[in-house]
Length: 274
Image (spheres, rainbow, N blue to C red):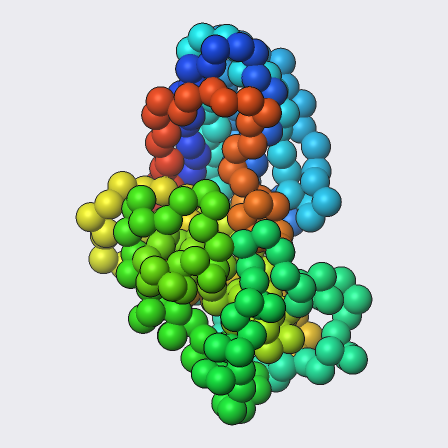
């Protein structure tokens, strides 16, 4: 049993809206773990009524209406996480489609940003000859990590895996979409994940903290974590949402066009449990 470490995580969004605008926020840790929330709070300015619900994928969401004019939505939580990186099993095997659990089949199909049908020839040409299993998925992750150059503003909310494969640039969600695309093209179930990723026991990056995206791949009899953007084991991953791709787990969905004037994300280690 690994020891636990403690983090303070959260985010703040500042909006300016011309009219009252319905919105859904998905920024709180996944209730089923592996992180354990010890304390959490929502704050809105002005004070706004809201209510929570669980979406189709088991993700926790909050609904509220942004008022006309300026507003602030803030989420803050103290979380405990295992003092360990994600598990690795180089011998984990791929599962033939015939033997996949019913709920995994959904994650072999094309979705809004993940296009295994478009990149199928590339996937089979590049990875089809490799021995199936964990090592082949790692080869996909290695290729995506080396093929794409990370850069804010190099892709848009409309960029698909095929788009970023052609431009060779993107942000963490694009790295995840491309690796998921190659996995699905090989009939390996893969799903998109996003959450908080603290800089625990790693060199601090020069950029400010942001949400992070990675993927989970079904091998053997369970889902395994892979991170095409960072491509190294990490401690402290705090899952927020899972889905087919970024469309299913948008951190904020607004039913209108409010202007996001500022956004801040934090994920910092603290003493004790808050």
